[in-house]
Length: 279
Image (spheres, rainbow, N blue to C red):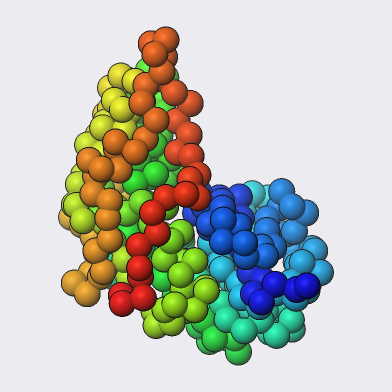
């Protein structure tokens, strides 16, 4: 017998996507995992129409950064968004839930390809024929030791750009996306964590928790607005825990053999699911 709801998760193997998939499966929701690892390419469209057969709702947590050396980031994001909206319309998907970054419309990011690409992608999806709900979130705790972006490893030190952020847990973002997709909330919203913190400090705390005592060197960001808090939560954002210290305690501790753990942030589908119906 067919499930009442089949949800496609676009970007199913990423930091947020894997968490969304785990939570949906824990609720016995039928899930279609959309990613290159599953033979589905959002940029070329390969396998996309076939994958969306019977899909009722889609959750987009993709980050289609080009890797061919020719396609610009804006071309990649806009192409992916058009392909996604096209297949949702063709397959009569009832609703699309989109994860994006809070604050990307700040003028501080004008002229910056990544942020302008995210803006363009969001507008394409909002202008499409399928009802779309946007969930904006501030940077995730997990970005503190991410392999790209403002954090770089250089031998025996970790170099971190001096961003002022108000981070949120990827687990919390996944919770909100799932609740939205399952119909408990419909209006767009912006979510954030409770604490403002400078990124180098957060990175140092995460490394220490993992038993990694490499020094953290702070460098100025290319965009001065990032140091001033351009990615802090806007005034009307909904604050959702955990706070920094609670999140840190949820991480696996350092290995007892004296070596840091592998840095995995894990995916736990059994975490407590708060009620987001009132936010």
